[in-house]
Structures are given as C-alpha cells and as structure tokens.
Length: 348
Ligand SMILES: [Zn+2]
Image (cartoon, rainbow, N blue to C red):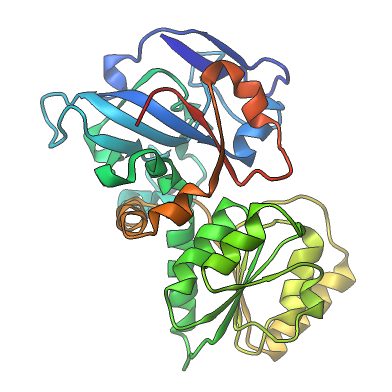
C-alpha cells in the first residue's frame, strides 16, 4: 500500500511511498482510509520540528485527524464492514500515571503517552490502517466526509468542558464569549457556543474569505483588530491562536470572574514585568487561565454526537480544500482562504 511518511526531526524527508501493510498487532480492526485532515502539527512534523517514529523504526506514518471505513471488523468488535469510523489519537502511558490508569490519557501527568501520527505510533495517512476496537469511534453515516472534523471537535469538546467545570467554582452567569482565531478549532468552538444562550464573538486577522461569513451564519459577531479594542469585556475567552500578544491582550481584557481557555500553542518568551502585570490582573479579577489539550474517550464520544447534530451545510464549508495523497506537499502549504484542508484517499 501507499502511505505519507516522514523521518521525524529531519526536514525535507516527507514522501508518499510504498509502505508495508499495517501489522496485525496494531489492532484487530482493519480500516480503509477515506480522508485525513491536515493541521499545524503535521506541518511542524514535516518541517522537522516535532514527532517521533515508533521504537526501532526510522519513519513515521503521518496524520492524526482520521476518517476511515471498516474493511474487516475482526473477531471481537461490534463494528461492521462498511462502518465509517475515526481513530482516537492518544494512548495511555505504559506506567501508567493515575490519570492514564482511569482513562484520562488527555490529562497524562508523566508525558509518556503515545500519539498516532505524532509520537511513536503510526498515523492515519496510509491507504489502510488498523486499530483496536476500543480506540475507534463510530461516525454517523449521514456525516460522510464531514466525519473528518471529529478530531478537531474533540479538542473543543474537552476545552468547553474545562470552561464549564471552572465556571462552577462560583455563581456564574456568562453572557459574552470571545473566540480568538477563526481556524477550524475556533469556528467549531463558535458553533458549539452559539447553541447556548450566549453572545458569541469571534476575532481573527482576516477581513475577507470564508471566515467572516461562517461566523455570521452562526448568528455570531466577527471582529478584526485588537482584543483590547473590543467594546465589551468577555466573560469567557477561548484562545485558539497561540499568539503571545493575543494571549496577553485576552488576559487584560477578560471581565471579572472571567475564564480564559488556552488551546493554541505558540512560542516566544515574556518579560518578568508582563508576567507580574498579567498575574495581578488575574488576582484582582478572580480570573482563571486554563490550558486544554487533547481529549479522552468521553470527549470523543460526545464530539461524535455533537458533530452528528450539527448543520451539514455549515460544516461542509469548513473543508475548503481537498487534495490527493500524492499532492500532500501542496496540502501542507497554507493558503490565505484555507480553513480545513483534507487529504482524500477514497470516497466517503
Ligand atoms: Zn499518563
């Protein structure tokens, strides 16, 4: 079969190549790839900045935002041939830490977890892949190709759960929510928040392209420019850019008793004075800054339900480009109007 592989930590080594069929020990369910979403992590791995091959191997099959069709359900699963499925990305660490021991691998405390397509387990950018049944989530068949959005939806399902949990620490009646960054994660956050009794605002750099219209279609308000220039103090900010200045402005702008949920990963330091000023603002307003990454099985299950209930036409507008596997390099190149780019292996 063919797969998109990379030698991690070595830039320029990604290729679409012949690759051995998945081994039986990788799981009893055999799946045919339908599509795989591309995100910033894939770009970083291809650029040689991140990623680990499986132990004893030099190359890693890329891809963690999967959608596939079951070819062979194997002897011990409730799946049937033809079912649409997505594969869970993270596996608990082998120790395991207390969180992994109870199935909360997203909260792993020792960092020894593994992740498909990222850390020591082959990903989903191969014509066929295998999984243990307990790490597969069945996709509502009416979603079709839109099932490829399930993994991004898990990230936001967990993040919003964290916000709700933090909110319970006091009497809490949030009215305004700001989402910073109108990429797939930010837009899915806006989608979920727009179903609640909240005024939803989304801020992004771009003034044209599909993002402003996607936000307005949710009944939400689209902004460009600085967070500091907004005419209100958000009760909740879901930060999806990872940009230092946006994070700093968010911490300054959020209202008293506010919650800032950080989901973006950026780089770059901060001065001691800025840290102290941000901390002072958080103390004086009882604010909480909560980081959120990955998702565990209950988030995957709920994300599947949430996606199945979402407006198909709106979801379909998130997928702005489909590329063939042999054109994967093109899929990884960011274009101005991209929201979600997918690599399509077969028809849904
Ligand atoms: Zn762990």
